[in-house]
Length: 330
Ligand SMILES: Cc1cc2nc3c(=O)[nH]c(=O)nc-3n(C[C@H](O)[C@H](O)[C@H](O)COP(=O)(O)OP(=O)(O)OC[C@H]3O[C@@H](n4cnc5c(N)ncnc54)[C@H](O)[C@@H]3O)c2cc1C
Ligand code: SF4
Image (cartoon, rainbow, N blue to C red; front, side):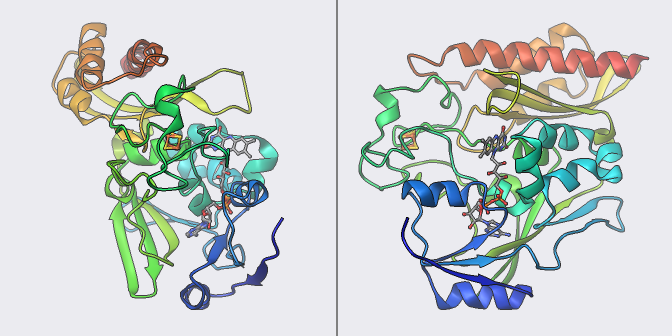
């Protein structure tokens, strides 16, 4: 392991100033992703700026009935928060579906959103990988890609985003706030993650040196009846091969409002707006749910070894929506 410096930041301005002074520095949250990448040599920061003691560790209600979540709130505290569990249950479920208890105790909200892909070639320094070394090529397109993207990918990179939390935040229109050397900024989560295009190494709209400070969830009464379902190859301690965050409001047998986001299918959590458009105003039945899934997945472009994901996601969407509609009818 290479030598690196370590400093603990005590206020937001100080943390941002430390990064601005050293372009090779990185923020350190729980370290559960960054330190692993340092061990393999994928990340080689000259200095770590520990942000865990910043005063960003609270989940607070906003005046409009939403929530403001600090970037250093641990995954465990977020999942246990009574307001999260009551008002956005799919978010709590998504967090609890990820990693393990020990990891969730360390991992922070900011770090979870910025965790890197689990594509095996990304961490294999001997393999060409455009995300790690722009212009090198993509080993996964012709190699092992059974858990890679079926939506929104490019020939330059077919990796998926691994965060479960990000999928639920995407369904609920979260906004990401940050402090950068040029001042504060904010982006809706759907703009925060950049399309993969021909620049897979550029993953987010975060300016250089910016510190994520908060995630804001707008009020969303529909979210009170929401669900996160994750399919994985082991019962626990495994990343998704497909996941769905969904919320549904049904009145008189008709869908009044729907929220749907898909995980492990694209380079970013995937907001399923085509499906939502089909659902809104449609009968809350299996035919509508299947039509909604088909509308979203019509854009799928599977690779030779991941076509199963299209069927998996169709079944998952129909199953979760059917479950939510059944609850609404009770
Ligand atoms: C065995 C294992 C299994 C896992 N399974 C899952 C899973 O099933 N689902 C899932 O979603 N995740 C899973 N994870 C990933 C885990 O959730 C992430 O490692 C964790 O959320 C990252 O948070 P952290 O605070 O430890 O980030 P760190 O490792 O500290 O940082 C990650 C990145 O974010 C940056 N960063 C951190 N905080 C900030 C900030 N406030 N502002 C700007 N940049 C910041 C760092 O510089 C770094 O680039 C798993 C991890 C492991 C090791
Ligand atoms: S899919 Fe992306 S991360 Fe994986 S090898 Fe290709 S460029 Fe690298």
